[in-house]
Image 1: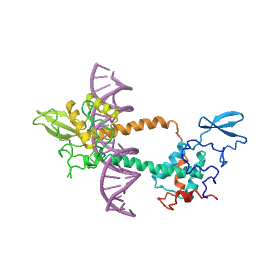
Image 2 (image 1 turned 45 degrees about the vertical axis):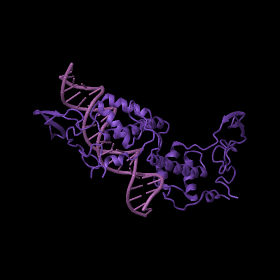
Image 3 (image 1 turned 135 degrees about the vertical axis):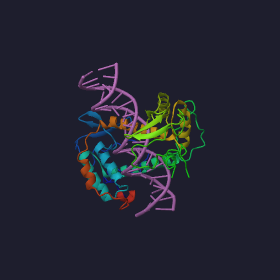
Image 4 (image 1 turned 90 degrees about the vertical axis):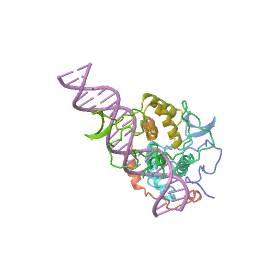
Amino acid sequence: MTMGFDGGKDSLAGRRLRPLMPRPSNHGCDFLPRLGAAIVEQNGKARELVNSQQVVVSSRWNPTPEQLQTLEELYRRGTRTPSADQIQQITAELRRFGKIEGKNVFYWFQNHKARERLKRRRQMDQHSPEKGEQQQITGQIPEIRNRNPKSAHDLFRIHD
Amino acid sequence: MTMGFDGGKDSLAGRRLRPLMPRPSNHGCDFLPRLGAAIVEQNGKARELVNSQQVVVSSRWNPTPEQLQTLEELYRRGTRTPSADQIQQITAELRRFGKIEGKNVFYWFQNHKARERLKRRRQMDQHSPEKGEQQQITGQIPEIRNRNPKSAHDLFRIHD
DNA sequence: GCAAATTAATGATTTATTCAAG
DNA sequence: CTTGAATAAATCATTAATTTGC
C-alpha cells in the first residue's frame, strides 16, 4: 500500500472529481497547531471552526511568490523530475516561506513540465494552420489567433 | 533559399554589432521615389543627399498613426504572433498608409506582446517584492537534470 | 517661444529558454 | 547529448516627449 508524502494521512493522489477536500486540519503539523479546530463542509468549500468562528481555509496549496520564484529558478536551471531526496530538500527549504509539503513540490514539477510542453506544442502546432479560413482584417488583415510560428526564422534568415 | 519580405534588398537580419545601418534610402520605393538621392554617413547619422541638400533620413521605421491604430486593433482582436503569411498581408495593407516592411510588423508584435506582458507582470508584482534569501536556496539545492528518475509511485512511498 | 539637455518610448538585435528530433 | 525550431527575455540604439535655461 503506497502512501503519500504526508504518510497517507490525506492522500490526494489518484483521486478524481474531488475539487475540495475536507482537509483534516494540519495533519503534518507543519504550522499552526490550532488545537480543537474542526473542519466542516459547506457549499463545497472547506471551512474550519476556530473558536466557534467560521474561517474559510484553502483546501489546496498555493505557492507564495517566493516559493514560486524558487521553483521556477530550479526548473530553469534544469530540474525536471526531482528525486524523492531532492523533493524533500526543496520542500524543507521552501517551508521557510510558507506551508508546503513534498507532494506539492512533486506535483508542481509535474504540472509545470507538462504545461511548458503544452505551450511549446501549441506554438509548434500553430505550424499546421487548420483548414480554417483566413479571416480578414480590420478591413482586410487577418486577425487570427492561431499563428504559424515560423516567422522569426523564415523571415530573417533570408539572405545568406 | 528563403528570401525576406524585402526581397533581399537590405538584409538586416543575422548581422551583429551593427548599431547603425546605412539604410539604402527607400529600398522598397513605397513612397517618396526621391530619384537621384544618395546616402552618406555622417556622425553616425544616415543622411541623404537630395538635390544637393542634406536631409536627415530616419534609420528606423516609425509607424504612422493609422498604421499604429490598425496594429493595435489587430492585437486587441487577438493577433499575437502572426505567421509569415499574415505578416505579409498586414504589411501590404499598412503600406497604404506609409512605408513599412514585414520585419517592422514582426518586430512590432514581438515588442508589443512582450511589453504588454511586462506591464501586467509589474502590476502583479506589487504583490511580491521580496526575494532576498530565495537566491540562496536555489544555490543549495543540487540542480540536476532528470537524475534519479523515480516514478510517481515510487516517490509517494517515501514515508512508511 | 526655442533649442539644448534630459528622459521616456519603442524599434531592432542579441541572448537564453524550451521541447523534441536525431 | 546534440542540435533545430521558434520564440520570449534582455538589451541596445534611436526617436519622441519633456524639461529647462535663456
